Structure formats: structure tokens, C-alpha cells
Length: 232
Image (cartoon, rainbow, N blue to C red):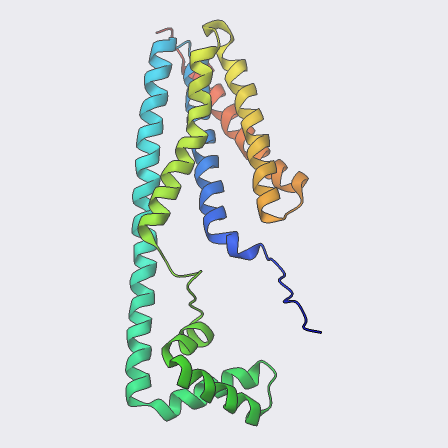
């Protein structure tokens, strides 16, 4: 009887986009909400708060996109240089590269004969791919994609920053500080739970991390707004 293929899904392949999404949404929510809470504590008008929130959303999203694009582009340049170097070595020092690959498999627990056979087979199949994966640590999943990372970071930032801006449109001016804080706290809890679920992590510690740092940021800006605020 033929055996069915056992497929065991793993969560680690989500690391790249999950990290960018959580970082972007968390940054957008906390930075925008903290700024608006600080300004609301200084008795700023709703119109000024809305303008400030939109400016913060736009500037933050563009900053996240630019920063992520530059960072990931640098990573992509390094990966490309490594692949060029590896291709040169494979062309000019094929025997040494085969022995190098064999040694890698030996260090992973294979006997020399089997390690050498595996190295030969993978070299014949695709030498550069084998060395990129097992010597350098590059795979299709881990390869840097600057434009994709930039767009994802910008969208993630906007998804977080838009929540306190909605709060400005919904809540009355005399309740703005407390309402923004409560709305942001709710957003932080949701973000913590969702990120934990997607990453397969314990919900409570992941949520507490997000909530504690967000609350500290809002408290700091609210105190500054109270200390230096004037009516606008």
C-alpha cells in the first residue's frame, strides 16, 4: 500500500514578513498614538490633532519604507556578492569546493563516504544552489527582497497609525486623552494576540511585551504634554 506524504507545517518560514508586519504596525500605533496623546494633553484642538496624525502617518510610513528598502537592499547586495564569489570558486577551484561541501555534511553527522556522495550528487544537480544553501545559508525563502519589504513595512505602519487617527474623528475633545489611550491599549492587545497566534508563540507574554512598552510611551508623552502644554 502506498504511503501518503506526511507534510508537517512549520511557522519559522513566517519570520521575515511577520517580523516586518509586527514591527511596522507596532511602530505606527505607538508612535502616532503617543504623539497624539501628548498633544491632546497639551489641550490641542481636534483639527490640529487630526493634521498632526495624518502628517505622522505619512512621514512614518515613508520613513519605514525607505529604511526597510535601504536596509534590505544592503542585505541583497551582500548576498549577491557572496554568490558571485562562490561561483568564481566553483569555476576555478571545483575540487576544493567539493571537499568543502563534503566537510559540511560530515560536520552534520554523515560518514565521509556518504557525505562525499551527497556532495557530489548536489554539485551535479546545482552546485551554486547547494553551496548557497549549505555554506552561505541562503535559500529562496530567506533571500532579500527590498521592494516587497518596503511596501509591507509601509502598509503595516499605516495599519497601526490609522487607529488613533480614527479616534480623533470619533471621540469628543474633552475625552480625547483617555479615549485615545484606551483605544490604543485595545489595539496593542489585538496586535499582541494576532502576532502571537501567527508566530505560534504564547499569547500572554507576547501581548504583555507590546502593551507594556506602548503604555510607557504614552505615559511619557502625556507627562510632557501636561508639563509643557498650552492651550491652542
